[in-house]
Structures are given as structure tokens and as C-alpha cells.
Length: 197
Image (cartoon, rainbow, N blue to C red):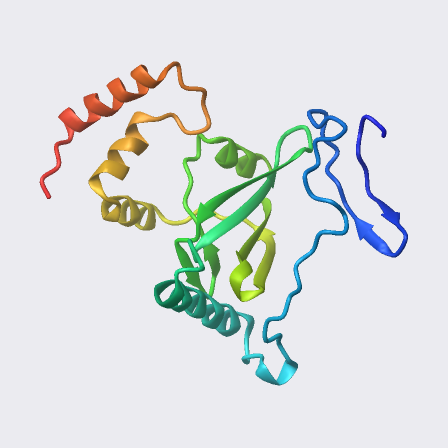
């Protein structure tokens, strides 16, 4: 087995593997023959709504409703966001979609985080909403643009108190010196900005 994995084909089944220096031979846990039968309803052209925004909104609403009814869509608003670092390496993480408007999908991030700095260097991103239990996903590609200060302030004020304290206490994407230092910073901000309900 080669040290580095790459795309290729075996018989009639195509596969893609990540080029990962950390992966060692035998680390793969899924065999190529493992698969799930996708027996969902499917989608026909006559079921599509008039605009992409209307279709996306419908699916987001249905994912939220299914989460409430069945509990098998654990986080309907989970949005995978991919950026590229300064060396051209892709980077993906999951955030929460905070708005869906005619101007596009939206998420909020600390501009000093890895994600924020990568977007500042290269505003092109890709994102995906995925609901495996519904056999649905939506992919997005485009350009990230800043949201207004009012939107950011409104969002932050609406966060639960402990979430706001956590945001102040941790330097997103930066190594933490220790658990104790993080808890100390949390306590410092909790004392400085007490919860008034």
C-alpha cells in the first residue's frame, strides 16, 4: 500500500481518499463495499419550487420539523463551511447557519479565528447543509461578505449568557494554555459581566 492515498478506481466502484500524511496503512475502517441503500423519496423536476431560495427554505423548514417530530435530524442548521488557507490547503468545519435570506446563507465567526483570517485572505468559500436521515443535502459556493455590525450585535445579544461569556473567555482557533487558564478566564468574564437574566 502506498504511503499516500489518492483518487483511483477499483473495478466498477469509484472511490476518493484523502491525501493525508497522518494516515497509516490499515487505518481505514470502512471497506469499499460498505454502503447504505438510499431509499428516500427522491426529487423530481415538477416538485421543485420556483426559486432556489424557496426550495432551500422549504428543505430547511422540513429538516427543523423532522427534528422536532422524530429527533433524527440532530442539528438541522449545521453548516459545513470550507475555506482555503494561505498555502492553498482546504479547511472545513461545522458552524450553525444563522440566517437564510435572499442575499444568501449566513453564519457568524470571529474575524480573528482561522476561518475568519482565511476568509479575509480568500473570500471564496463552499458550504453544505446535510440531513442524512432525510437523504438530502444542499451545496453552496460563492463569496463570503461581511454582515452588518447591527446584525452581529443583535446576534451576540441574543446568545445565552454562558455562551457570551465563553466567547469572551476563549481565543477562537488558538491553543489553550490549560483547562485551568480557560476556566479562570471564564470566571473573570462571568464576574465582570454577571448574568442579570
